[in-house]
Picture 1 (spheres, rainbow, N blue to C red):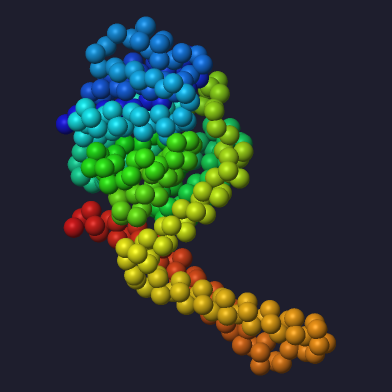
Picture 2: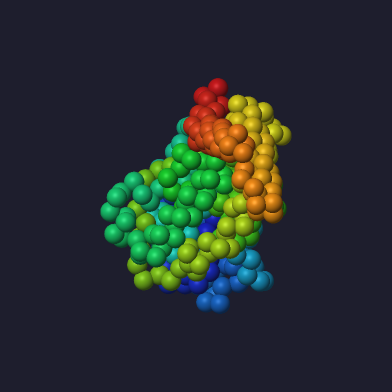
Amino acid sequence: MLIVGVIPCYKTKSKALKVVSECIKHLDIVICVDDFCPFNTGKEIEKNLDDNKIRVLYHKKNKGVGGAMKTGIKYALDLGAKIIVKIDSDGQMSPALIPSLIKPIKLAKADFTKGNRFRDPNVIFKMPTVRFLGNFFLSFLTKLSTGYWELFDPTNGFIAFSSSTIKLLNLNKIDDRYFFETDILFRCSINDIVVKEIAMEANYGDEISNMYPIAEIPNFLVKHILILYKRILYNYFIYDFNPGSISLIISFMLGVGSISLGGFYYLRGMLNEVQTPSGIQTLFLAMVFISTQFLTNFIYYDVTQRPLFRKLRLIG
């Protein structure tokens, strides 16, 4: 079983050499993708690490972490990789955890694995405050938009997946930038891919992150809304029709009806200076209440039943 690592390299000259030298202890091949790095990280790796396990690929322009990963994944698939691991070159992820990361895939207990930095409550004090708050909010958005409510650290970039899993996804459509991990999760969700997390410790030293989570929230928000819409469309109306679908339809119809009814009588009262009949007020409140109840039913179904279906699919 060929296990290949892909390491996007950008502005990590001082860290990448150590990361790559540690990765080759646990992987059959390590693919380093120099994403048009101004510090020539790829050249530094070739000059200082002479090992036939290492392959260095170069971009002629910066494509982002997602673009670098897509280049590495395609190359890994051409080599015949069965499991592909993504690890960043900034030293925040320990290569020693690679065997634990790929173990659930090798044992057929998962199709996709991710690191989880929050198994240790002390991470709150280790992670820079701004980064923690940004990751916390982005994690919630990711759970909502992808449907992977069972994941506690869905934005984590330490990931591994089987070649059969990545072949189910349209690699060319996956985001080229920092939305890469979230976009993959979205595409996994519409294929009911089972994702497991492993505990890990993230190292926050003197590295300079190229992404600022709080600054990225406005940029990510539109993308999250878009994939949420797509996920609901695929999971509840195209690929499946289930009790969650019915609850959402009823909630939507009653919600639109209550807004229309309330808006009409509000404008009527304002223009004609008449009071809305108590029966209409009662009907409006009843429609809002029932709509909210059915929306709650849909959320409960999405949070509890979809993850259960993924687990049952793996067992079956």
